[in-house]
Length: 390
Image (cartoon, rainbow, N blue to C red):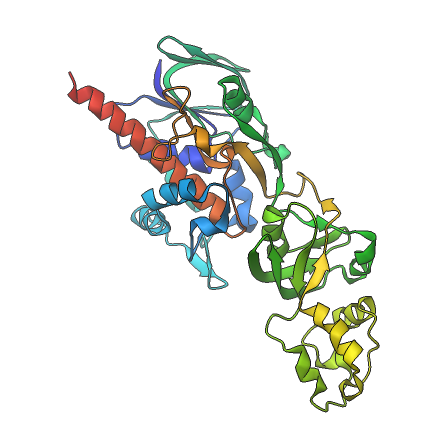
């Protein structure tokens, strides 16, 4: 019989186990389908793991903002960085906003392994079924069965099928009466309607843009791909897009009216974009590439679309290309101070399996780490309270 059994050895599960290691009286086990821990951590961020961002708030997430703010406030970005520093990892900042491991993702994985050396790991085991018992839970896997007093579901989403990702977490949640939102691809490239097929000819070209979607403005690089558009700005925009138009500003710092300042240069030469992109944009907007001093009022009106180009995706690249899964266990069914189920005492849901999804840039790892810590601290608090009661 375990005191705590964690299903999933990803970011949230490993952080939860690491925090629980401070309580030596607890017998903790972790089950994962992969043959090694932190499989998704290892490959993320080009193998260097984008741990968190320089600016983190509930505004960077899709989900219940009050719930998210409570969890992030309990274990903030600053506390995460302090935790890493104490354990010998000093992340480096890239693009003035993203924290990465300096050498490789193995740096953070090794911290978790070291902190959880007393934890019992059961790797290469698929979770088949979970049931409630009078004194806890019974977990059946492809290899064995285990009993535990407390159960933590940290099974993640369904992207990265090659890493044995599954929807077992939300299936368990539904079994215990929780409302869930079925997983859909997020942080993923977007496909084109016929009207935007001109973008296919620009495959491989990138530009810094600002995308407006569902009241959010996201400024970063956009990449043209053969299937559609991708890159950091698009991946984050895909999180919020539901249907209809989003708007792309191809020149966030440019005043189109400056084109009329008696320039004899052609429009494509004045626009601060690659020549191929400039010419393709002009063609899509039905504006002849001519000297700026010959622009008509109609031309200028059409050119305004460069700053607010309407784009309605046909769809997305699917789970095979998605960084994360949007959806999961509805947060209103969980206590924000612990992430314990409101329906089943001693049952917890953390990380990506909860209906909280962050933008690209370390936000989902921050959520995973914060939720793992909040869960673990509640378990420790309850354990100590019971000890003091005797």
